[in-house]
Amino acid sequence: MLPSDFWGRIVFILQEYGSSFASGIWTTMIIAVISTAIGCLIGFAIGIVQTIPCDREDNPVKWGLLSVVKFILTAYVEIFRGTPMMVQAMFIYYGSAMVFDINMGMWTAAFFIVSINTGAYMAETVRGGILSIDPGQTEGAMAIGMNHFQTMINVILPQALRNIMPQIGNNLIINIKDTSVLSVIGVMELFYTTKGIAGAYYTYFEAFTITMVFYFIMTFICSRILRFMEARMDGPDNYELVQTDALVLGEGMHTYTGKDKNVSTNSDYRAHKTGNFNRDQREGM
Image 1 (cartoon, rainbow, N blue to C red):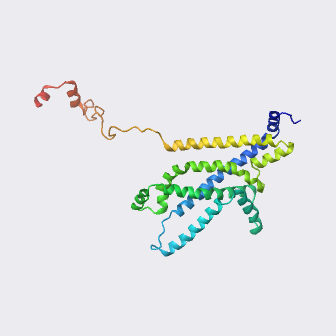
Image 2 (cartoon, one colour; image 1 turned 45 degrees about the vertical axis):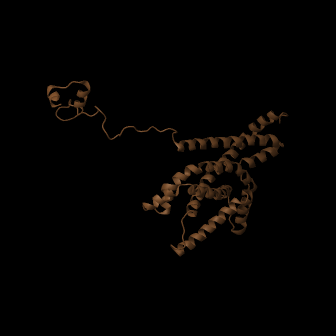
Image 3 (cartoon, rainbow, N blue to C red; image 1 turned 120 degrees about the horizontal axis):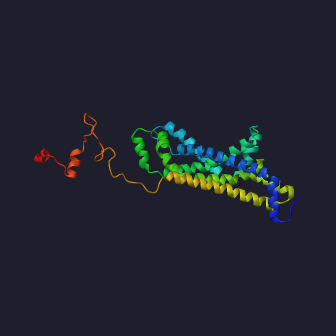
């Protein structure tokens, strides 16, 4: 029997459909995390290609091919940044079935749609992160014989990664929420599950109140984890300066290990400090 009060209905829904909510949360997090990771890889690849120096005078063939590739990548970025993910989901899911006779499953469609959408945003983020690094870093890498790819992997991207970490976290938070649009193609994430639960007893307000809390918990936990990772990448705030050379032996620390193991190489120094000089030493002085 459905309780009449608000909080009673909340408890009733959780007791009856707790496992359904858990399944929706699991699906949402899996899609968001994996798609964000794939989207980051797409963005890094596009960002590296878009920053390849290209001069028509060096090699016309290289310039022509690279110009075509950059044009295609730019078109991809602009189209997927300029259209809603819900429209992209409908276009790709139903269009691939009608035009190419490709019937995507739930997981395949979800990963593909969210990944390519995230990749478009990450491409511009990576490009901006690369351009934010001092050009002297690139010039120095080129001076020691690195090509563009080696420079990006070993010099530029490790530095740019820290600058774009907040945006990577922001994309993850956005994807956790935007997986709800996948309900239009039948992906059973948290929003889709909630609609079914709410329709069973017509408790839309109560069911979506629970869902709103779950979304907040997911995004809050992920944001705290990402903040912790950013702090770890920053390192300590204070650094201890080395006052002595670690390669120089300290006073009274080294003992001669020849025939007489009790004779220290710093014996004259200690004798001078303590005043214990023998006659030969005084006469020599």
